[in-house]
Each structure stands twice: as C-alpha cells, then as structure tokens.
Image (cartoon, rainbow, N blue to C red; front, side):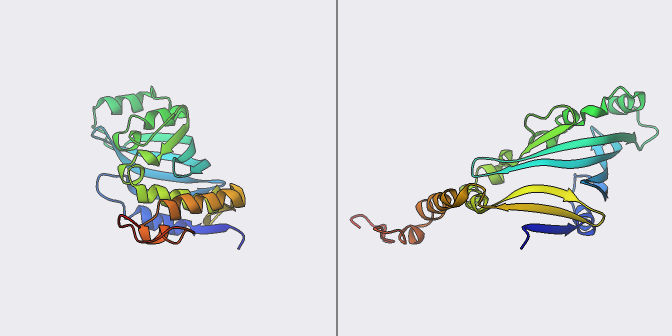
Length: 209
C-alpha cells in the first residue's frame, strides 16, 4: 500500500547461490545502507579473483525504449586467489597498478558484463538491458515494459539491516500518459481480439471487415 516492497537480503543470497555456470561463485551479500556489499569469486581472463564492492543503485529508467540501471560502486577491492598465478591480470592486481576507484571502467572490459554496459566511466556503471537480445528484440517485452512503466515505476532502491527495499511511484506520467500507454501497447499493438474491443473496430481481421 505504501508502494514499497522489501526483499529479504537472505533471499538475495539464496538466489545468488543458484547462478548458472560461468558466472560469479561464492557470492556473499550484506547490507551497506543505502546499498549492499557484494563479494564474489570471478574468473578474470583465466585468473581466479576475489572481488568485493559496495553497490548503490542511483537511478532506474524503464519504458518501451529503454531499461537502464545506473549503479555506483564504492570500496572495490580485488585479490588474486591463486598464489602461483603469473598472468598479466594477476601482475596488475598485485602491483596495485589497477585504479579500483574506476571500477566502472574496468567492468566494461569483462566480456559478459561489458556487452550490457553503456556510458560507464569512473566508479559508475550504466547497465542497458535493452542490449540483451531477449529483451531489446522482443516486441512483447517492450510492449509490456511500456504499459507497466506508465502505471508504476521504480523510484529508488535502498537497504536496511535485513531487507532491500524497492520504492515505487504510481502514474509517473500522469493519468493521460497511462491512458495513452494502455491505448498504444495494449489495444492498438495488441492481438486482434484485443484491438477489436476499441470503439468502431471489429475483432474480425478478414479482408472486407
């Protein structure tokens, strides 16, 4: 009722532990209000690395044209787990040559992460989920985003000791914007039987009707 949903951090830990192959392992998530502190083991060009950083979600923008998350990273550290590793990555981390205050720039060089990044500089990441083919190239997903984002949108994300709270804002574009989105994404661009519900329209799409 207060347009706020609390997600237990313990639940995030459980989800992180069920990640697919090739992603981060040994993920740890702890509150760092108003963000969260995340630790994970990564494979950086064949070198096992333990990464630790605090994540703060500064802005979320969602519509049928964009789905972007603006994230700030603070206190990032990297530690090589294999003492015998002699790769260039291991050498850079051990020497302190990597500027971890620019962790957003570093993330852009990670293959699976970099493919979704846009305008990421310094300690900020801009994740553009429209670059994911299952989202950006799906008309159904884009219509759903356009419709839902006109009714309710994410206003902010913040944490406390046990929860990650997602704050929502109703009717971000007003009643008129919501009405136009329903017309454009549900009726006009919807299946024939839905379009037929519009005044003066017939659900029969055969020639001559």
